[in-house]
Length: 362
Image (cartoon, rainbow, N blue to C red; front, side, top):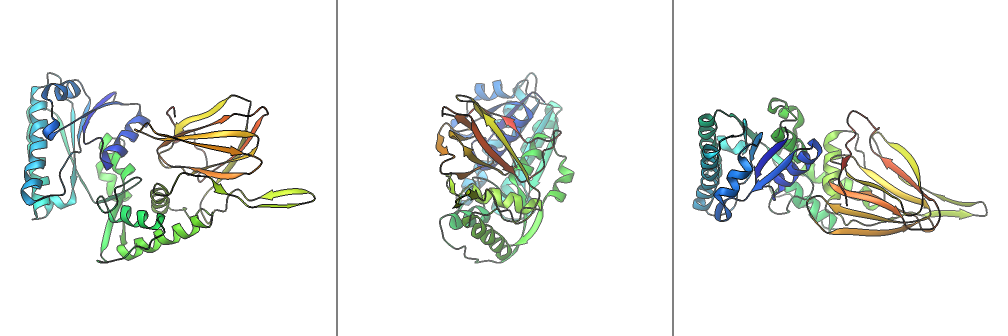
């Protein structure tokens, strides 16, 4: 796939999908819908694209707003698909498991699916209706996108989650959802990637992770759900250096770089000559920690899809740990006059076949 078109690219799942498309090397045009819909702009984006992914929807508002909004968005794109001289061969709809329920939101999502399915049939495209469970992931909007986002936000602010309705949830990480949407994972495999947890169990897991991280430790991330939850929690914590205690005596100093409670781990180090920058990439899943051992450097980070850059001066004279948030481009530059020595820790063994390292300039 060389080119895709989406709607809802600036939303929670849309942002995760844009990051997945970057790793795949797929160019993507996002199409505004609703009041900002431009028929000619939409046609230019869809015409000649390999895949169209419809993510835009209305999930808050009056019953009328939810019903009318979801139908309008789908009808705008259905008209566009029928106008295209070279329509996409695949039309994907980011639906919800609630589409099978008899409530306003469920009926609205099901109706939008019917509109897009008919348009796909008219243009000879494959229609993929993906019904997602509860999605969670980095930078979800608290008190809006998911209970996971709300709990992570509260814990990062020093608060405590309150469980009001303790029910079982089926959870799927947004990066796994994005892989399904872009065709990297077959929708039939989605069930094996989702997992179940109660609301109280989720609060407990996140609370233990937050407690460990506040103590400067990496919690047990040996299983995928916990790694995905921890990366989600980290997205609500400030991007800053983590102080490292130096134990000094007449021989010199001893500093612990990382204390990991479980899972794989790989440690490496690099030397960097003055004026040189390393990095300029991001990770979708990998946990990575930088510690400057000797020399002077600046670590720069930028969330993918945004322009604001966080700059952190670091020095071997006062070592700190800096953790790279997932889906943030990052680099490190030697700004001193001597060689820079930097230690790196990652939570997984490097796999050349799946490096999880996507080029992106800060």
